[in-house]
Every structure is written in structure tokens, then in C-alpha cells.
Length: 97
Image 1 (cartoon, rainbow, N blue to C red):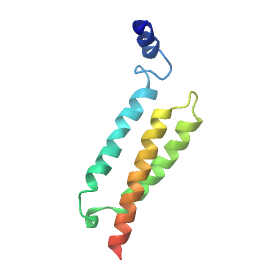
Image 2 (cartoon, helix red, strand yellow; image 1 turned 30 degrees about the vertical axis):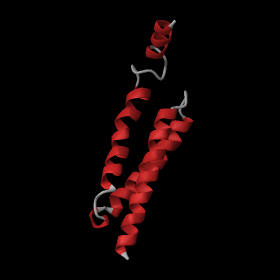
Image 3 (cartoon, rainbow, N blue to C red; image 1 turned 60 degrees about the vertical axis):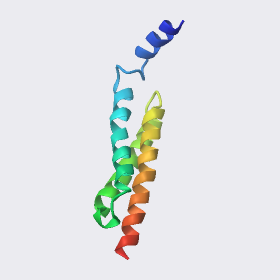
């Protein structure tokens, strides 16, 4: 039973043999980097880069919702990144005065 479920997952349209799986896994690196950057002083934050990352994540959240089958892993990844980047952008804006 467990083997057949695992085989079904491996061969599914969102399984590990597809970009539906590996794209979001790779993108979690952006979230991890943003979380690590929270320890750095706000003067080191690039407002342009944080803004670009916000736009990027917003666009890919829409993509993850519209693609069939829906890619909930990608949606969660970019929603998390959007949250982290908006926080970084607010830290940067406060540091600008």
C-alpha cells in the first residue's frame, strides 16, 4: 500500500520528476536567505533588490495559482518570500528616515 502511494507520488504531475516539484524546492533558498538577512543591519539592505523580489514573488504567486494543476508548494514558497521581503523593505525604509 505504501509502495503504491509512493509510486503514485513519483509519477504524478506534481511529483519529484517534474519542475512542479523542484522549482519550489529551489526557490525556498530565497526565503532562507531573507530570514538570514534579518540579522544584518538595515543599512545593508538593498531597497531595489527587495522591491524586485517582492514583484517577482507576487508574479509567481499568481502563476502558481493559475497553472494547472495548481502548484501549492510554489504558492507557499512565494507567499513566504513576499512576507520576508516586505519586512526587509520596511526595515530598509525605516533606516532611510
